[in-house]
Length: 463
Length: 104
Ligand SMILES: Cc1cc2nc3c(=O)[nH]c(=O)nc-3n(C[C@H](O)[C@@H](O)[C@H](O)COP(=O)(O)OP(=O)(O)OC[C@H]3O[C@@H](n4cnc5c(N)ncnc54)[C@H](O)[C@@H]3O)c2cc1C
Ligand code: FES
Image (cartoon, rainbow over all chains, first blue to last red; front, side, top):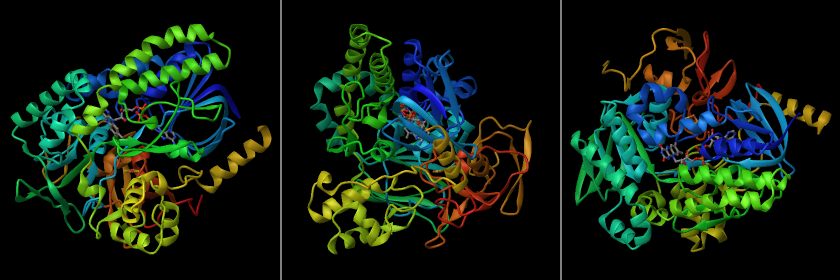
């Protein structure tokens, strides 16, 4: 069994920064990520992509290079293609690498598994040709692919980013269909401190929008009734905007209305989560260093609540400082001296979030989908099914599994969990916290029996 | 630009093409490329069908979270978006839910 002072799960900005800071403090680090290369979602494959496509992807992307270079140092063992499927509170981590089960033990474990895009259940969202906007970005970053006849739909700054990147790539989208309304922006201005601080973000967003509009991309706002048309493949996006119905023929529909923490790893350890009204999702409540309530488990990055890449990086460093102190490699005063500027920087970065969250709320049509709309993609359970379960007495998501298999497919509720909780809460007139979320148990990702058996062997021998 | 294909490839890799079979059809795909991306670029639209209603599915998240890109490789269900193209891969559409694999 491999051992390390610190096992970091996830090599995005949070995980990379943590690994680097921990190694600087003299800790041995095992950095695991299921992707083939470092970067996480924002800096996906940055080392290869920055040289060939840096001009298209922009400076916010190439900024990730120093982080990737920063993990090439003594003390850090990197294992890519490592899918972590079990973590326990003693610091034992099981993963699969090339079909081989591997067990490792860390004195501390940092969960840096990032975010997922908020599920956007609308009619037709399961059709081939429909993807998340983030998926399109991954295709662009990692593989240099751009969909030729695409419509973007939803809300949020990431939608502007992919639109601008597609324009720069010479393959602009056909249209940008936004769901937020003017009132959202006005409400957001009330968060005036954040709005001022967020000026940089606003200007960036405006610049990307202008770039997109100049390329002739049609833009709609306040869209409702959004649906994807098609039998075996997406053929068109239909919606209503300014009282008019629209139909845009296309091959690809890219959906996005924000990102939410990927809570699978933390939940499998029983880490508490609470509902955040502002972010409209469940978030864990770590302490200022990322401590979770389990002595050996810490959490950093967007998995701990959405703060964006810079906040993720800072949180990774803070968690590493905490671990270095816990393990006696750094004194409390040394830690605090290094942490003070990081705390200040984090507060500055976080100040913009209330503004952004209010200006780009999730699409209400997808928070309360029509009865016929599939909510659980894996098991094809509809919103109407979930409402019916509630009327039959179903109070929470775990019961919904028994009523109709919602959340029991291979994605283990990653893309239906929030919708199932919200629908049950709405229908039962209950709170989100009272309704709860799916119980998450290992394996976090499907594993083969061979992989399971191999890890049992290793635990038996060494653990 | 080949307009029949839904994706534009900004940097086509013609140096290291290898043969991959998908559902009986041979494709020449760049070695080491992401399998889901390479199949999408080659015009494949349906990766699997659902166990419940046989509805067609294709990659949705490209980050290993949604499992809509499931395919069968050497009898084992795998996520195409988490697999790299290798010479001689034999890939088939998955028609299972793909939990813990029966052949593992
Ligand atoms: C698809 C997508 C695209 C995004 N693009 C942008 C963007 O262009 N610009 C922007 O500002 N923000 C973007 N974001 C927001 C994103 O959350 C960033 O803020 C940032 O990447 C968060 O950093 P992180 O370190 O917390 O997590 P991430 O960067 O998400 O890194 C988490 C890492 O953990 C790994 N991981 C997860 N689970 C496991 C497991 N079980 N086993 C092994 N490894 C695991 C993942 O492979 C990933 O590499 C995107 C989000 C998503 C979901
Ligand atoms: S596309 Fe979602 S898991 Fe592969």
